[in-house]
Length: 496
Image (cartoon, rainbow, N blue to C red):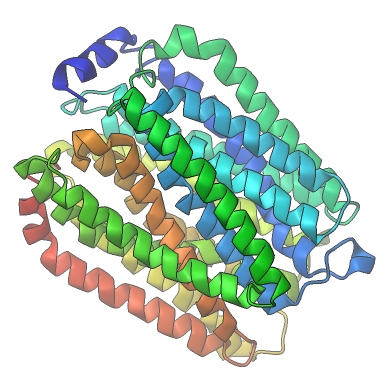
């Protein structure tokens, strides 16, 4: 997008009105609030729904397989963002992508809410994966479009937006987790209502608050290109459907082979995307340097999200089977622990935002913030191995150990996630604006694709080794990144 068009978008939106930020931040804050309410409410109980016995309302899937499927599902959710980013950049813009994505997510949760079979479960997963791919990266891109690159409120704006995400993510596990023992499907139905409310907020306020933000197609297809692309998409969908039917009937497409395929794609797709952006004639010399700087940040993000995203797999299972769920006279739902991460973010996000504003140009650089985030993530895993060291692998663990682990990891997340969102909008080549935001979410996709393989090594017997090796690797990578920070900063060409 040209500097002139970007300035028109920035100028078209009132610059103050929502905590000193553009009014459009209100629209995006509450749209994402309800979208995250629906997604995290569903996710809080999904792994239990998969491995609980049929007699308890679950699907009766093997627990280790369920943990891998959960990781693959998370990977596909973020991997699909590359499709959503491309559609926004080339066909209908980010605003429409957000709206269409919300509709698909809502229907995905409705399908989950209907008692059915494993087939219904996978149909809902397809709808939610595609919908989140359209909505998730593009709503963040619209936030970036409301600020000029020189606006010092940009990082603080993303932190406020991040609080909206986590407010929804905090409430939904408490509500959905409370009805889990009564009915999984009721919980999924509540998630569907959440996404419906998000769509209502977006429709009613976008015209007044967003102005031109999200309406510009940055790199539109020509009519001839559109015809060619739609033909390829149609043929591709038919070929994939036929291949799936044939491979399943031959016994070649199994859960295990599909998990392995997604793991490979989780690493291959972002690698190819970096190559495409770097070699594109539409990428300037300065933008090419910034792409180089983005690579170590991306690798650091993969390491961090590998640990953080195990909150819905390994730590969820840990909460269910290794933790004292009757504590201080209260029966704790294992799903409630999913609210800890967003709760701590809500508490500490304003603190971090205030620190960055106070420090101004004296604050740590982006690479330094990323290196510190890896340190905290690693320590959060080292903390959770202590109960097994102190009391053995057979004893139930005080839930405060899990609380402490989540808290430490949140400090890392606040150093990486809102900063990464902001850095992505700054470092993105103009011709790949929305797609670079999709690339940021591919870090989580790659992390969870790797997790699908890693979680297989977790057992109560290997618990200490599992947490120790992963935690130690994160700390080591953080130290390396901190040492390389000045060099990475030089490749950013003025971006801080």
